Image (cartoon, rainbow, N blue to C red; front, side, top):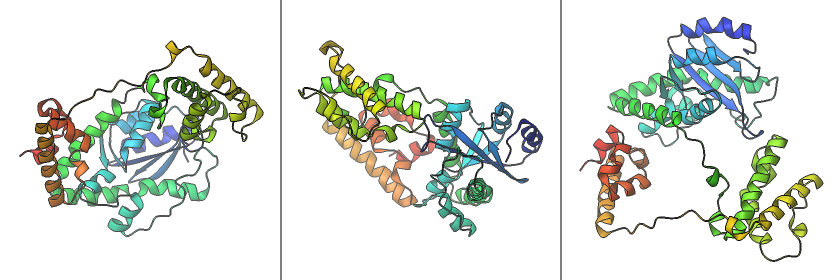
Amino acid sequence: MIDSERKLAAYLPELRAATWVAVDTEADSLHAYPEKVCLIQISTASGDRLIDSLARLNLKPLLEVLAGHELILHGADYDLRLLRRHHKFVPRAIFDTMLAARLLGQRQFGLCHLVKQYLGVTLEKGAQKANWAVRPLTERMERYARNDTHYLKPLADSLRTELGIRGRLAWHQESCVRLIQDTAAELPPDPDSLWRVKGSHALNRPALAVLRELWHWREREARAANRPPFFVMSHEAMVQLAATVTVATPSVEPLLPARLSERRRASLKQALEQGLRLPPEQHPHHPRRVNHRVSEGEKRRFSEIQKRRDTRATALGIDPTLIASRALLARLARDWERHVPELMSWQLELLKA
């Protein structure tokens, strides 16, 4: 485990000279709030290394070296967003083994399945939901973490060869570039959308006002307890409470969940009452929906594009959504010229009449 500045400085020349680099990360999103990058796993020809990103290390030199390599990752989207969000890290190039497997038509593309299929190795499972913030890591957790990157290079070699044979390597390269661009351009969430959880569309405006206060209460409680928000109160429970409390009742007290501590019940009661006290003009509105009436021509174009997509996907043996999602098909049917830039060149080629 690299858990000191001295160890990290000694490792960097080795990493800098590496001919290939595989990377993975572990976070504690199931156990803490906000989440933290707890571990960075790196494999090179020289071996596997675990970087303790909780050890108050200056990770900037490490990330600068990593940025100079093509990184092999499995399911890169999550790792890239995590590293971008916490460390402003954007790689130069990547090879995503999960994406490669999907472009080859694999229906099961988890790392364990692919390593078994391509390399004949059975990986140990069971540590996916572990609390990666605990120290020291157990031997089992360390073994699991190392395995996440140990086999990525030979797996990537096999997938790269197969992609080349089947004429899909350029598809993968373009898709990896797009993935880097998309994760690097992640925008901060809209504050007025964060609290609009699933089910909020069915609430009236007074209930929306209460739900907004509930969401902010839950955020404060989750951060104070360092626990994910769903441990404090689920989306469903918040929506139900917001709907119930706005019905005329003499007191909110009977509606407070009994399982909560006295302190948390008091703070919840205060949040509910604050939402109830808001004057009507301060009640949130539902987002304005633009009602688009689909013309017969648009329906016909959608059907034609979808048929082309599905026919090509079947012939190639891949998931049709890799070529274009249903939502993108609808946008293309509405205005092809406006939305065609959303397609990568290989996707456009497959969708052309």
